[in-house]
Image 1 (tube, rainbow, N blue to C red):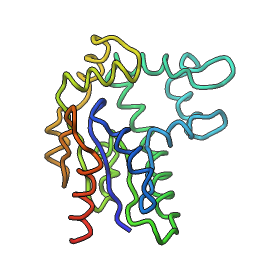
Image 2: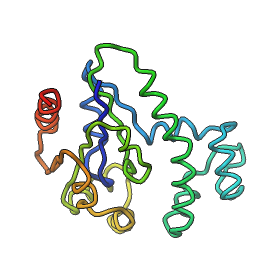
Image 3: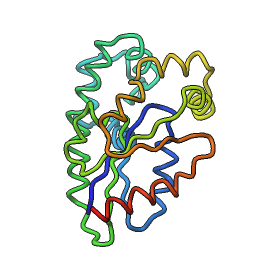
Image 4: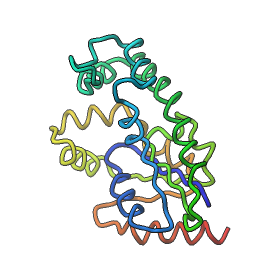
Length: 198
């Protein structure tokens, strides 16, 4: 089994690629964002650590995480964002590695780690290969607006705090330019063929 990281900035098409990969019987996708959500429930060590770091103001009255309040806090404050990332990496990386180690199905040829912060979290170190998804900024903005129901300015401000595409392409083994009419199925098939030949 090969472990493959999939990364890229918001709007590059990672979610669409993951959906395609999830339909394959020889692939197991581990979505880092979903793992974070699963760990963001009351009673977990991860959530306790968030409360200790950011206080009650990022929590709802029922004890659940107030994602909007936390997002607002980290988008406007680099130090807060770095603190949250460090905290998240500490818990989520261990969980993802554990899930990969627990894949016992012999039919699985590829374990995919779908993670926007693959390099920052150092999850790339447990990958055999890394695929970067990139797209034109205008297209990324349109995708983010449609996906999250936000305006262009908000989408632009989100992209502005993320890395340039070159950050991902320089560190990755494969690059998919996810243009308007890109056939992601065909692109991933080509990459898998190359990996299996290696």
